[in-house]
Every structure is written in structure tokens, then in C-alpha cells.
Image 1 (cartoon, rainbow, N blue to C red):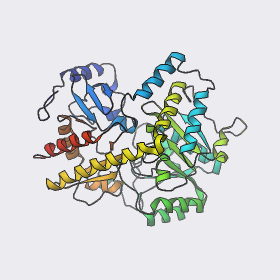
Image 2: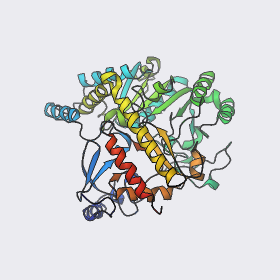
Image 3: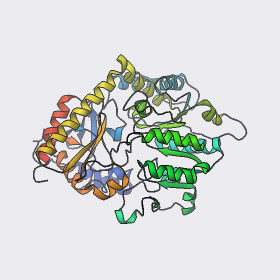
Image 4: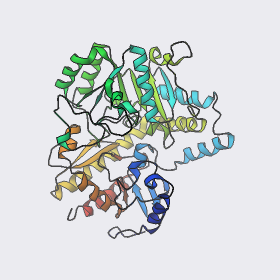
Length: 447
């Protein structure tokens, strides 16, 4: 294994990336994997086991990215490998009714407090698309409120102010500038979007008093995971639940990132919030593509085949192989009275504590924000990052990227994008945390 302090040989990774650029746009299938994030080209990964991954040159790393949070059981969990092998031998997919999808749905309903019914999709983006369509059908309204900095997938109406921008482009806090995140979207697409800052109760009340009666829904992440890991202020989610009910707007809780991570029922269980509709993905599939929409029968039954139904098709919805993995994953997370969650929180809190000690001892202005299974490091002189505008204004994202690239040379794998987050899986152990803290200490030298 390469020494912890010398630059790792990535010759094969560089060759493979050059080859990939001949066939793939930018050599990748998502911008978060390419040169926009990895200035010298990405590390090409070849295999994973438990908490570790190996690249094409044979270097090993402790993985704290975990497929952006999808791999809650780590890499190649033995039970999941067994389930996949057996299911493939029997037939991976039929596009027909199977017992696998009902088993997965039952386990899902047992864990998620608000789920009278569930509909499986293939991605989190598909789930949030469907959630908005259901909300519009149920309320008979078209407009919805989204918050600055929240990402709900790449569906056209959601792609507004979801990326970081220079502070002078953001406009006043009370009336944010509307900045589309992609070309190719007609501006009229955003006519039904009401935009507001998050974590601000005064502005929330003002916006809801003005627009509440015409809103089909308010969609929010319970923890802002698109700008790292920004926690809700005390009472904010509860007030959001209260005020949406007041105006008859549905509360869509986007738990694509947080679902099945903080508690068996996700953040809605952890924070005691009862959404009208909730969406899931990532950790639900333990590495397999998945999305889900959950809620009461009165809303989800609008997808029943009838006149004026909400249409939701999909050849791969309820994919048999994925459903088998989902059921096995949820069984693992539920076992031994939720022991997995005690582990996730203990290991994550140990990592956070260790990193905070390093930055304090090194006298580096940084905050480690979050708790338990998910957190982020911000190089800033602020005591906390509380919203999108804090992130855009006060966070040194370039310094973070340099820091993470130094960690790569010390056997720690993480995306250099400050807008994402560190993930703890059930496969991580205290020894992994110890190596992370040592690597961070070394990486801080002359930072």
C-alpha cells in the first residue's frame, strides 16, 4: 500500500479517464464525477468491500462518500450479495406483479410513520416529480414553494437556485433573484414556482401569507443536504408543518438523502414531523437505483386507474432485483431493535469530534456541521452555516477541495465538492475514524 504521505500513483486512472472521454461527455455520466469536481481528473474506482474501495492502480481508500449516501450498508455486504446472486438466477425483472415488491412495500410501511401506501420509482428525481404531480392533482392548485439551495432532482421546475452562486447575484433575501440551474428550460416553466430562503421563520410567514392560498405544496429537505449539511433551526420544521396546514398546501418532505439514515423512519421520525407526501431514494436501495413516494391513501390512491387519475408509468418500477435488495436492506436496518442506527450515530459522532479537535488544535477556521450518519466540513470564520446564503458568502469551497485532494493521498476517499457531505455506513468502524483523523491532521499542514 502507498505511504500515507506521498502522492499516489494514478497512472491507470488517468489513462482510463482519457479513454472514457472518447465516448462519454466529459468522460463521465454525471458532472459530479468529472473534471468540474476533480481538477486533475477523477480517481477511477474498480472495486469495494465494506468501508474500503480500490482504484484502477491498486490504491486503497476508506470511502466516506459511499455513492453520495446510497451505500448505507457499505460495499458488497454479504447478505445483499447473496440476495442479488439468488435473484439473478431466478430472473431479475418481469415488469409484472411480484411478491418481491409487496414484501419491500410492507417493510417500508412498517418503518416510515407517514406511509399508508408507497409507490416505487427508479430514482429520487422521479419520486419528487411524482410527488409534485400528486400534490397538484390533490389540491387543484399549480404553484409550489421551493427553497433556495435545495435540490430535488433534475426535473425542470425544481432547477431554480439549487447551485451555489456569487453573493452579488442572489438578490435581496426577501425577494431572491431567480437563477435557473440549466439551459434548455423555458423561463415560463418557473411561473408556478415561489422561491424563498430556508430556515427563516419571519420570511416563511410573510411568503405563506402572500402565496399560501394558491400553493399546491411546499417542498423541503428536512436537512439541507445540497449545501453540505445544514440543520434546521429549532422549531422551523414544526412551524412549516403548521403553516402549510393552515393554508391547505401539502408538505412534501424530500428524504431522498436523509431517508433511512438518521432513524428507521428517516428525519420525519427523528424530528417528529408528519408530512403529507414524502420522497425517498439513495439509502433505501443500498446501492441499487431506487426512489419512492409515500403518504396517505387519500393522496396516493389518485394513481388508481380511473378517469382523472395521476399517471405514473415505468417499465422498471418495482424492479424485482431491486425490490429484493430493498427488503433485505430494510431488514438489516431494523434488526436488533435498530442497532444499526446506534452504530451509525456513534461512529459519525466520533468522526465529527475527532475532526473538530484537529481543526481547533491546528488553529484552522473550520466548522464540522451535522451529526451522526452525515456531516460536512466548512472552512469559514463563521460559527455555523445556517442557510444557502451563508454557504455562498462565507464558505471557502476551494480550500475544502484542496483539503480533500490531500486526503486522497492519505487513503481517504471523498468528493472534493463542498456542496455534498460525508457519509457513515454500517460498515465503518472506529479504526476508519482513527485513520480519517490522522489523515486530516496531516492534510492540515500548511493548508
